[in-house]
Structure formats: C-alpha cells, structure tokens
Length: 75
Image (cartoon, rainbow, N blue to C red; front, top):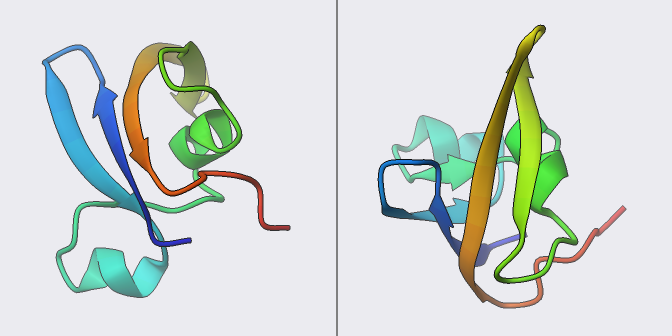
C-alpha cells in the first residue's frame, strides 16, 4: 500500500498510488488493491502488459511502466 505506479491504459503514461478508498475520496489518483485493476497489477512486473475486467464482458489491457516501491501482494 502506498506504492506509486506509472501505467499506460492506452492514452499514455498516468501516475497512481496503490492505496486505500480514503485516498480515492480525498482526490488522490489511486488504484485500490481489491479493484479489478489493482488485482491485475499487484505482483506484476514492470514492463508487463496485463489484462483486467473493469466490468463483466469488458476486458482492457494496461502496461506497467514503472513502480516506486515493491507493488507486491500484502494479503
């Protein structure tokens, strides 16, 4: 939790923090670890392209461009 991550969701690099729902509510660009995107990226390698399903029947790819911290599973 709290690791910075740079992702390309198809529109170029974007910066996020892997963190809590409270951070989302505070307006911090955050990916929660339990979200579909969070589950796809946590534990993945920098440079990897992973697929996630934001809602049933929709599959999207995201490329992990960089990580500040370890971005490992904490559960």
